[in-house]
Structure formats: C-alpha cells, structure tokens
Image (cartoon, rainbow, N blue to C red; front, top):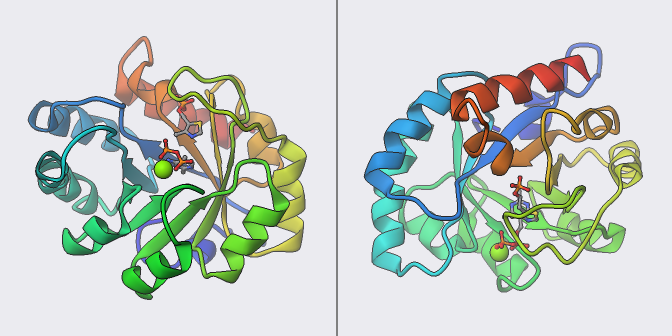
Length: 223
Ligand SMILES: Cc1ncc(COP(=O)(O)OP(=O)(O)O)c(N)n1
Ligand SMILES: Cc1ncsc1CCOP(=O)(O)O
Ligand SMILES: [Mg+2]
C-alpha cells in the first residue's frame, strides 16, 4: 500500500493478486517505547501499511503518537493511516485514514483527504456497504470479522466467499480483518484478499512482533 496505487502494486505479473500484510497498532501503547518495537517489526518483513488505532486518547496524545510513529513507517515505505480521523490525518501528514460506518460522513472525508491520501472503509460482511464505499471513492474496502477476536468487540462477521465475490466483481482492493493469524489466514488469501489486517497475530506473537511479521508473511506466501 506504500505509494498511491495499491491496486496496481498488489497485482503480480500474471494477473495474480499478491496479498500483503496490513498492521494495526496495539490498542494501548507508549509512543516513544513503541517506536522501537515498531521499527523492529517493520524491518522483519513485508508490511504494506500501518494503522494507528488508539481509542480514548485526546488530540494532543494522538498528535504526539503520530509525530513519533509516522516517520518510522514512512521512512520504510509503509503507508501510515490513522484510524477514525480524516481531519487529523490531513493535518499531520498521514498517508490516509480508515473510517468505520459510525465515523462520520465518508464522502466528506474523501474530499478532505483529496486524491493523494487513502481512505479505507469498514464494510463488515456487507456487499451493499462495500459497493457504497466504492461509489464514494474509497481506496479499499475492509471486511470482517472473519474469526473471533479479543482485540475488539466485533459485532459483525464475514465469510471468505464475500472476498471471492468482491475480487471477481471489482478491482478495488479488499482488506480482511478480525482474528486473523498465520494458522487461519490461508482461505482468505486464496479467496482474494489484497491485504490481511492484524493486531494480535503480530503484537501478541509468543516470540515477539518481528516473529509475528515473519510468520504472517510465510503463511501468506504458502497459502
Ligand atoms: C483495516 C481495518 N478494517 C476495519 C477496521 C474497523 O474500523 P471500525 O469499524 O471503525 O472500528 P474501530 O477500528 O474504529 O474500532 C479497522 N480499524 N481497520
Ligand atoms: C479493529 C477490528 N475491526 C474488526 S475486528 C478488529 C480487531 C482486529 O484485531 P485482531 O487481529 O487482533 O483480531
Ligand atoms: Mg472506527
């Protein structure tokens, strides 16, 4: 997702889709300490994007986290997206924003972000929401949760055949999210997911985040 053309970047020479890892930060972090952890994780293998996802923090704390973490990602050609806040993403030089269905007016966010910043939209398990997201100019649609997760109280579920349908119907990249691990991701890769978004599989990996990135990339390659 580094750069501005995720669709082209994920297409291999033979028209095959190359699935890539999309990391989301842990729900709570100390930005200065986490910058080191993040650098080691991003240096461990291919990561297309990092989403900063911090809930219940004020704008000053968010800005501080962005200032410390954005350069770590961007200096490695990893797109840096902000959860929930298109306005702050623009003000702070993020590469884009990820918005859910309750995170404001998507068309307005699209305008605010302009053509050079990415907009990702949560579509749960819904074809209809995904087509709406495509119509307002989203850069990717996110489907999930595919598996049980303890990271978020995920009220919606999605099945791999949704990814397959989407991939066959549309060029717009899809992101799969929710409880994804190296052990369970193969059906999502085979169904055509362009990106796998993960939290726990990397940050809670028993051998540490770098091992988590390596394990996810190995599983994607083997799928
Ligand atoms: C890549 C990606 N997909 C889905 C989500 C979930 O977004 P949302 O529904 O707005 O829920 P919160 O993340 O805000 O709790 C996501 N963040 N990233
Ligand atoms: C943010 C979000 N949206 C749907 S599931 C989820 C959490 C993903 O985290 P994990 O990869 O640990 O299940
Ligand atoms: Mg949200």
